[in-house]
Amino acid sequence: MGSATLPADDAIRLTDLHEQADTMLREVHAGLSRPQKSLPPKLFYDKRGSVLFDRITRLPEYYLTRTEVGLLRRYGPEIAGLLGKGGILLELGSGSSTKIRLLLEAVRPRLYVPMDISRQHLIDSARRLAADYPWLTVHAACIDFTRPWDLPVPGPGRRNVFFPGSSIGNFEPGPALALLRRVREQVGREGGLLIGVDLRKAAGTLEKAYNDAQGITADFNLNVLAHINRRLGADFDPGRFLHEAHYNAREGRIEMHLVCRQQHRVRIDGRSYLFRAGETIHTENSYKYSIAEFQQRAAQAGLVPVSVWTDPEDLFSMHYLTVAA
Ligand code: AVJ
Image 1: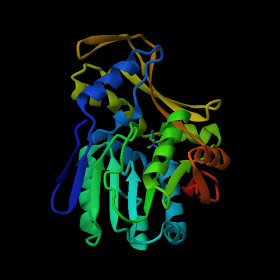
Image 2: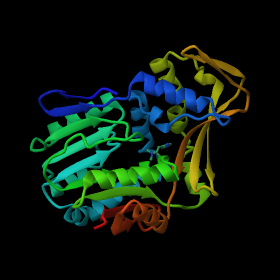
Image 3: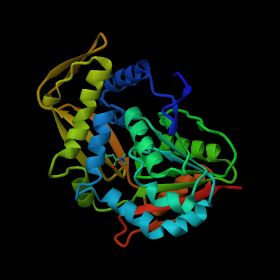
Image 4: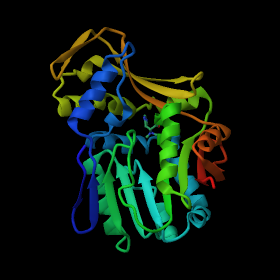
C-alpha cells in the first residue's frame, strides 16, 4: 500500500492510501474460494457504485438516510454542543459529504477529514465542500478502513469521528469491535464518536428497504461484478445474476446476495470459478442493533455512551460516545 500526501488542488489536500489492485485481487480470490462464495461490500463503491448509492439514499423505501438526516436537523445544536467547537472532525465513509453540512456551521472545526474508499468520488465531494465553505480546511483521505488505518492528520485539537449511515452494519461482530477500538485509539483521551446505527425492526420494513421497486439496489448490487471486471480484468456476465436481499433474524442482519441464474464460468487473473445455477455470492451484511446491543459493543471497545437520539418511529439511532477514562 503506497502512501502519499499531495495537493489535490489548492482547495483540498489528499492523503492517498488507495487500495492496490493486488490487495483487491487477493480479497476477491479469497471470497470466491469459500464454500459460500462472498465479496466484500466495499467493492460496491467505484464511481458508479457511489452514484447508485446516492440514488438509494433518496428512495422512498430506504428510510435510513432521511431518518438520520432528520435526527441531525432536529438535534444538530445539541450534538454540536457535545462535539465542541474548533477541533478536528473526521468522517468515516464520507461518500458525498452531505450529512456533515448539517453540523459544520455549528461546530466550525479547524479541520475536516473526509475518509472514503471511492477515490474520485471523495475528491469531487471534498472539492465541492471546500468551495461551499471557504473558511473550512479540508484534508481528504482515500482509505480502506476495513483494514488497519492511522489518522491521516495528527495534530492539535479535540478529535471527533463522525460515522453516519449505519455503515458499521457492514462489519461482522468481531471486526465491528476492532473498528470501534481503532476509533477509540485514534481519537484519544478527549475524543468522541458520533455514529448512526440502524435499529432492529420488523422484517417487512427492512426487506422493502433493500428491495426497492425501481431496482436501484439491484443495480448497485450487480455493479460489484462490473467493478471487478474493470479493475481486475475478469469476465463476469452480470446478466447471469439476480439481486436478492432478505432479513436473517437469527443474526439480526440484512443479507444481500447475487443469485446465479445460469451456470457460469468466470476467469479472474488466470484462475477460474464455476457458478452453478441457483448458487449465490454473498455480497453484503447490514447488521441492525438495538440501542442496548450497540452500547454493549461500544463499551467493549472502551467507549462510553453520552447521548442517544432516535426518531418517533424508532427506525434509526444516533449515538454520541466518548473515550472511557
Ligand atoms: C452504506 C452499508 C449502510 O447497509 O444500508 C444500501 C449499503 N446496501 N442498500 C446499508 C446498502 C444496500 C448501506 N450501508
